[in-house]
Amino acid sequence: MDDHPTGAPIDAPEFNRRMHALVPLSGQLGIVATAMRPDGSATARLPYLPAFVRPGGSVSGPAIMALADVAIFAGVNARIGWTPMALTANLNTTFLKPPQPEDLIAEADVLRFGRRLAVYAVRIVSASAPMEVVAHATGSYALPGSR
Amino acid sequence: MDDHPTGAPIDAPEFNRRMHALVPLSGQLGIVATAMRPDGSATARLPYLPAFVRPGGSVSGPAIMALADVAIFAGVNARIGWTPMALTANLNTTFLKPPQPEDLIAEADVLRFGRRLAVYAVRIVSASAPMEVVAHATGSYALPGSR
Amino acid sequence: MDDHPTGAPIDAPEFNRRMHALVPLSGQLGIVATAMRPDGSATARLPYLPAFVRPGGSVSGPAIMALADVAIFAGVNARIGWTPMALTANLNTTFLKPPQPEDLIAEADVLRFGRRLAVYAVRIVSASAPMEVVAHATGSYALPGSR
Amino acid sequence: MDDHPTGAPIDAPEFNRRMHALVPLSGQLGIVATAMRPDGSATARLPYLPAFVRPGGSVSGPAIMALADVAIFAGVNARIGWTPMALTANLNTTFLKPPQPEDLIAEADVLRFGRRLAVYAVRIVSASAPMEVVAHATGSYALPGSR
Image (cartoon, rainbow over all chains, first blue to last red; front, side, top):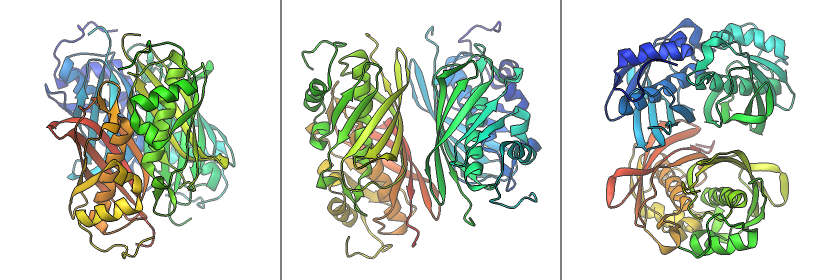
């Protein structure tokens, strides 16, 4: 699948490069990790594209869910190194307020990082209004057994 | 936003045409409603695209969540007519088994259709194995107040 | 904790006896499994008690969530035998309609039964109106590793 | 149902008195609000009772879910005054780590407080280890229309 050793430390630029190669949809959407921290937290950004528009002039739900999912994936890779086979087990997204059509930022924080499962909470805000949460997600990733 | 009267009956081909115009991301992903029934249930299909690939050769989670979301949106429009301003309030998706890289089908069924909120369960299967659920979602849509 | 071998087949009366001994709260609430099937599905019942009342004359949410949780636990025990260390990992309950103050019945069905995790959907109805779902839950149980 | 005007300000002791009268199950479980703040956040406590034990010596899931539900209910009453007809619409609880058999504390924070729906995140910790989250919930309450 790729030539990079599983579990090797990885930073955000390299993570984005590999993710966009292995999960092309994330690259098409333009989602990038902007910060990956050793504790497993991460920040990701969804640059606004006209294709994301939704009736009412907001950002469509699937784009927001993709952002939340990538933010958690970045956090998992920040904590345990390159792990392409970490898989989403569950994502529960609550849409709190239709965001303006602009860049969105997701902040993913670890609730619990177990051996087999990592559980996260994600807060999503608009780039221009970072104090107002527009969507909130909780998600879990199943971690590959070979670790 | 569009010239079509809210609440007017709509069939799947016309729904797809309007949805792809108003929510361009759904069109880029290629998601289509294939059945819309008066009781509010609906079927949607995600034709497989190489961009959906995920490490392990499966379909990426965001594509699956987008499919579930559109299936519910189609169901809402099937039940109460054209309602572009119906908005996802919550979507909780559980990924049960990584699907093969092929078309996916979502079946959305009404759990409760209230005046202000519609709640659905969605079962997602691979086109070639319709008896095995690969993902399950529950979702709610907020309905516009002017109905 | 108890003298019964993990994994041994168990029927509903015996399950109820052990569960009420090991999880006293379930006994205080009066929840009983009424059917446990080899495929992992199960039915549980919450006999109405005055303590469950809620403003508006309905049944309080925590009693309903307890019923859903026990129904899944019964299903897990139906499928893999007596497994007291199976633990709830997640329960997502949506309250669709305030039920009348009467007995409630939960039907738990397997969405996926893996080696480490069992995922269920649960439909909850009033005893007198079995066709109307008053609450819906999806839940997952972590299965002990020694199986 | 009770003689208290809906929407009147209420503090934690009075809230507990009325809640235990109107929702007897909460009183039987012994759950109390310990702080209710004007911004809609609240703290609730579940004093440990032997009935809450669970195989493995932990606290049973339904007791934890009841605590999360009451914490949100307290928060809603803190924000908009006495509102007995506020009803749980959804509660999604993730169990992160089996807590020790001791008192649990829930901290409920507002994600969004709308006119018709209030959405919360709840963190649950053991009284002796307040930095470690043992369970996390997101929940929404439907607010009565007459406000």
